[in-house]
Image (cartoon, rainbow, N blue to C red; front, side, top):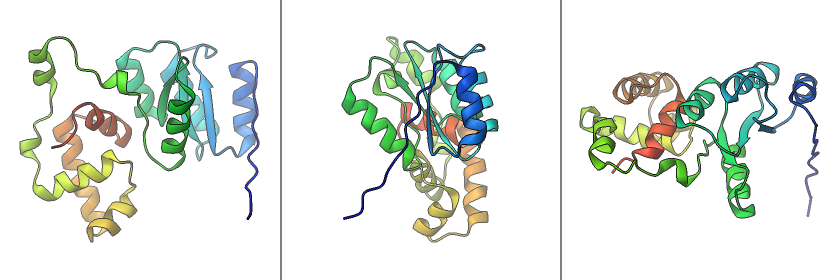
Length: 187
């Protein structure tokens, strides 16, 4: 039985982390945004530029939903609260490492006012049945090529469906759409 060896590097400052990311070749980066000088979104953007092939999970004690969504939109692949259980941390790392977006359950909790929740809900009725299938695949973190294979479509057709889905969800990126789909799951 072969065992993969994974190197773990822990650095005391965001600047040192950025230097390591630039030269690194890391598969996964866990970034403590309390160390980032300009907030979560700027940290995610900088890490994505420094290490474009790395998957990025932002760690924080507290984060506004708007900042979380912006972080996902600019390159982060997940968010993990610092007080997360070991089981949740393992789940987040596995999800992100396998190509999915991870957002903890408490982020999905609806606001206390149900009318407010319904007012923000996407108009899924505007999606065709095929677009709904593509949206479900997107929500589980599948890439365009994988969606095309799974649904027996061309990549170009999947991209057209994704554009329509983004318009309905009022999103600009896959990560932002995945976060919306996590909050308002498809039936």
